[in-house]
Length: 464
Image 1 (spheres, rainbow, N blue to C red):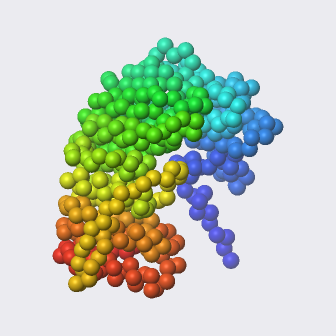
Image 2 (spheres, rainbow, N blue to C red; image 1 turned 90 degrees about the horizontal axis):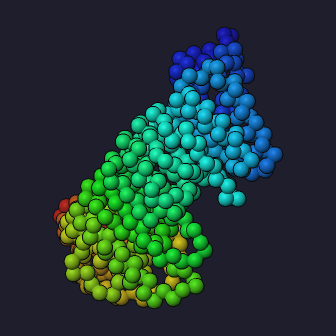
């Protein structure tokens, strides 16, 4: 009986290096035990992933020592680094070690440098000045680091920059934009200290702000101004308790507002939602030309609280609307206001996900209407005038009769919108097979009867 050939080892070295690039470096080193061919292969790796999760100090110190020794062995064979990734619980006593690692990466002309230095003690790593002038860096992700006494930056090839858990002022943003002529993506994750994101003079086409970490433990009624003349995609996510002002976003084509702003417990908030509603309206006025809009649960909640009807809705250019919200009584008025005022809306995408934060109880106005289907009186949860131009509806996370309002909402969309061509309903993952046949039949029959009002509508059920 012949010995089976080692098909993996017969692959070219370039493919083997690509496979190894997905592994933590300690696992890459272990491959040297496989056979003679793999014995020295790890020492030529151009992608280095050093990852350590344990917060035990002795374990972390052992990890740091392992990285030091690995880089010494790699120095001779490694010419150019495609990626250098370090993720471990950082302590101030390891500052010099991390600096040596960064200088190693710079020396080997690293293309992607990730420093994810998580910590619970507030220790931040000061980025070395030599890193601020690097013509080879293309991607960077720095968490719990710090810009210290930065006169200027020069990243001629940098295209993507992600910064997390870092405090900096407005001047740092301006210097980054001015010194990065190729920067296309800027993502800020729970950073703080800045009041204005001025991207004028740069080429940033996508800006992501994921939360704003507060500097003190009390509510700050401050304003965050965003000046982004070249940005085409704008995403605001996470907890942002500041007033947001958009200025010069004329080239924006897609926006995602999935942020929220919780009420502070130690202050009176009688006009909180009214003030936030005014803020949202002002933001929408800056996005009058945007065709693709995504709104999260909090934005829908704010619109549900507005007392006065919207005669003129700012986002008149919106053709595709995505809402991340469950179809529940408290959010329905906000969704209805959108459907009534987005006159060019053609595609509606609904992600029926539960919110990840709590709201106070609120009063919801009644918005009922009456229709006749096959001679029978039907009470509608939607008023007339909703979504006249709708052609396509996509529903994700559908739960069927487990939330009866979902079925009525979709039924009424079919009744009201005569131009609907397709409705795609994706059942919540793992739920489709758990619903009884009778319930499944009820959902199908209800929507099928409503579909008869539209000559073009096609209703499709799919699994997520």
